[in-house]
Every structure is written in C-alpha cells, then in structure tokens.
Length: 112
Image 1 (cartoon, rainbow, N blue to C red):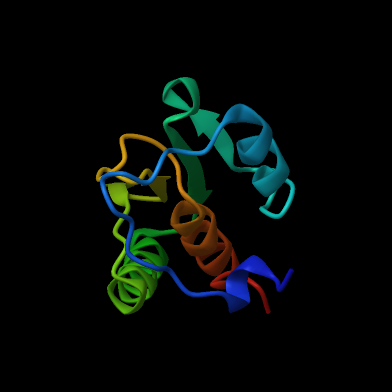
Image 2: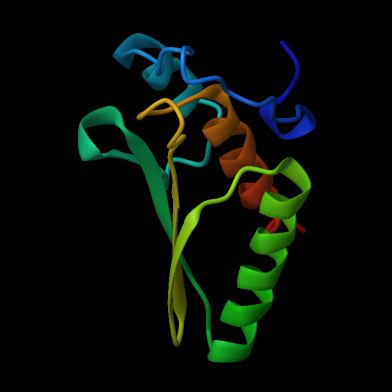
C-alpha cells in the first residue's frame, strides 16, 4: 500500500459504510501519534500549536489548500497559537480513508 500522504481522496457515496474500529486503528498507525479518535470513532482530530498568530494562520491557509485540492474539508477551530483540525466524512456519518489521507497530508505541512 502506498503512503497515505501520496494517495488522493475519492468521493464517498452515501452507501459507503464508515470504517470499523479495526480499520480505524490500523490507519491511525500511519498518522502522527498526536492525532486522536473522537466522537466514538466518527472523527479524528489533532491540535497543532504555533508560536504566534501569523504562523497559525499560515498553517490554516496551507491546510485549507490541502482540503481544497482533495475536495475533503475539515472543521478548523483557530486560536492565537493553535488550530484544531478535525476530519470526518459527513456523507457516510463516520470515518473514511479520505479522512486519513487528508490528515497525513496535513501532517506533512510541518515536516522540514
């Protein structure tokens, strides 16, 4: 299987089932350990921290670009020195591979 950050999202149909707990735990191993499963397995989220508002907003804009390119959009909560990124696939009411692909791509934004 290719690295998650190298893959691209595919549209989910309403008939696509959400991931089960086993698949979620398997995919979580491919992400930074700072990600956590939320809402009883319906979402994943991570808080990113920054030294100031300028760097926080640079990250938010970069994450928005990733979301736009993949057509898979997270919920973002932005504060002065932090941004909570939360992925879920609304169309299926839970997690899909798309959530993990985008989370892996967001993780790469902070790699040097």
